[in-house]
Image 1 (cartoon, helix red, strand yellow):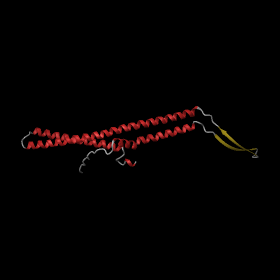
Image 2: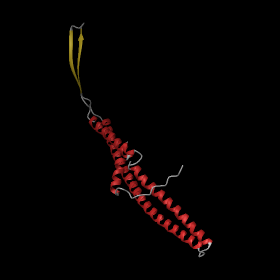
Image 3: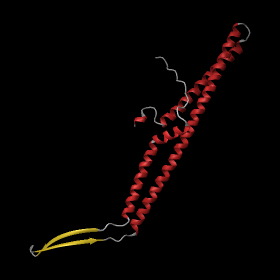
Image 4: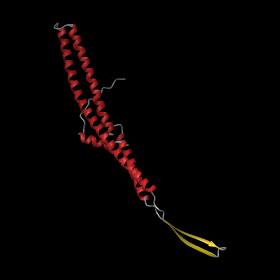
Length: 200
């Protein structure tokens, strides 16, 4: 089985505002919190409606004296409102306000994390490009050192040092390539653009 090579990191396809908008729109955490907020608002609305108790109207029938007398009546019940319903409404309104504030806090937190991820991806890409240039220059220096050594112009110690620098630079380039790919993929996952997350 032959090992696969890593792909080259590429520039981000969208600008920062578009990435931030996409990640916020696709955030599962925000969707859950929005559903919680909606539930809290509905509970508060119901508590507000229940603050004034509903009157009840009833119709009843009865019979007396061996069913020779029939009684038909209407009953009206108007409960007196107390402080319990008002307190319940105020508590439900507070819960809705807390859910709204928590949603806004989470939205800002995700937006800030997205901005950091975008910055990390761009910085990692620049770092990889510099490391790649450095690795190419170190490789060229090692080739020139090998050529000079073959012509008798350099010593073995200088050649080994150039080779080691070339290997170290190639390793640094590979590490920075991996970091650039990880940063970009982290952003793609948050935006639900890979792994079939867009279908969910």
